[in-house]
Length: 380
Image (cartoon, rainbow, N blue to C red; front, side, top):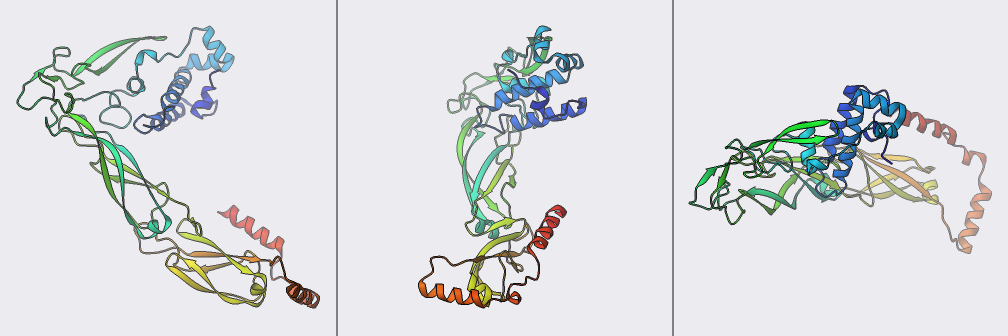
């Protein structure tokens, strides 16, 4: 059973035409094959989104669906059919034109005259300490580059290149596709010259006449100090090679920062937990705590309670592109001793029996702490 088109596009049932169009373009961008090269479900999800858009973008079909659901649409003869388009790239071209969503060469269109190269996505993984100091990282990726043998023209060196007879040198063909809504005329690249308008008499043996070839490269990237997990770095000109002398696309490096065993990051601040034995919390002491720069000494005041927080200023993460650093928040975890020996138990009992109300009066009640915490989260 097909899904509710409103659910597919994530729009309310009273969504305007502009909201529906905006939602579909957002989904189409997310599901584009260039963005999801390793997701085998991207094409099916896009077809589902395209089907939902076809229903909701047409006032009559939308009204029929609102009243009778998918059964009503089928009874009226509607059935989404993208089989005639061949690939998801063709469907993108039908909806958004040959320029695609990202500019330049559309997915699956082959070479077009001066077609700008596509962008590539690369992922590098670093740890928190490297994110704090910055690091030179590298990643291997596959990219389409210009063929050095034919210098990108697709012909064996010294052999001629002729005008394509099929398209007359225009590089474009008009194609008519039958759909449930009538004939759709679209312009696409010539299937003989791949949109170039010319064909080599003797195709280059190294690239089979395409002018470009896929190679594996190593991308070196300087990751700046302070970068956060999920941020991207753009490196101009390191994407797929363009055709006809057009510039190459860009490489977008997604930075993943591994979780640290001691620190949790919150913006530029770091949070860590320091275990404090209950007798130490009662008496007070100076304890060592780990930081990004090594260890630091903090003073635990007598009578420290569980959950109290100490702050080491300027010991957190640096702000991206700035020298200023956040703070290190140290949550004190008062540990109650277990597995006491007989002698330890006797000492604990002596302490218990000697406690008075004065020893147990808290500066702030548990309920007051709870209310303060709730107000803090609501304000945030």
